[in-house]
Length: 69
Image (tube, rainbow, N blue to C red; front, side):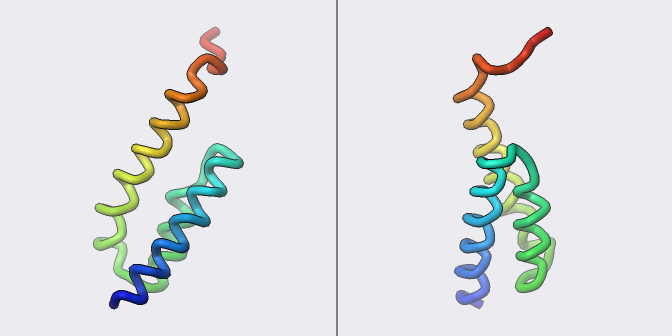
């Protein structure tokens, strides 16, 4: 089971790198690849908080670039 969690960490790294580049899609990629190894019920409590933290950080860091009009 440990190998599955290590592979999930690699999937998360890939997915969140792609979100940092494109601006969307990390949860879809990480959940799709992770579901090959682990049940979705185990993945969601890990992926959702990570996604909120990373997206919140990116929004806070680039808040001056938001077009508020």
